[in-house]
Length: 269
Image: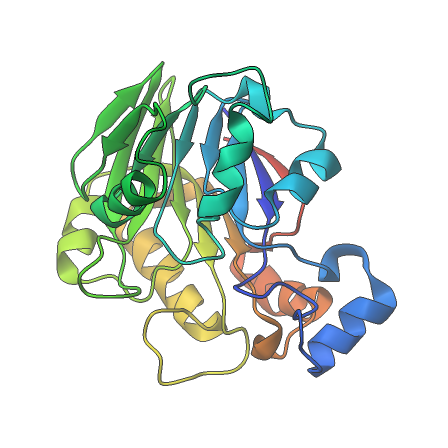
């Protein structure tokens, strides 16, 4: 199983769209891995995770083709993950398709918004629920409950299994509640992609992780055996307000065997 990190930035990317932070200015001047589009990923070439406002740029930058997607799996409805207006470009009059060419898997909040926005558009939509697995092609996907966003929305992280290998894509996590921790007990994760939105700046908001909280989550997963000695750990969903450049984060996480992700990084699970 191959995972491409198409985007690794937070809600307004890096440099921040209107941001004048130190990290934003550094990214504007230096480019490279410090420039981050909104967080999104692609499993192999066919399972798309989130469809945000930078999707057009991401598929061109990574050389992927949306016509190869058989499914789009959403984590939650925040605008940096769910660009509802962009989905119209999948069908007529923008293409020859009269039906959405991929299945959409999403929580009830997203499904409701899609039906309101596209009441007459033939779409294959499946409502997902945390801790309830579903199959698509040869994947088994199990959403797990994240601690992020509105309490009325089932914000999800994603366990994705294929051919005996397991990926946990965990962006917008916050500190999981005990039900999620209990669910992960006994599961072996070969690759964990985990948010580090707040970087070196701790805030009172509990829906994102700073570097110390990210490390605490990883350490607990290692102690539980969910992450083994051979498991890969990679960060994503970085905000310029975290006051950390890519190199600064990489140096901080290196002793802990955590790789700082960047746009275009390809990982083998």
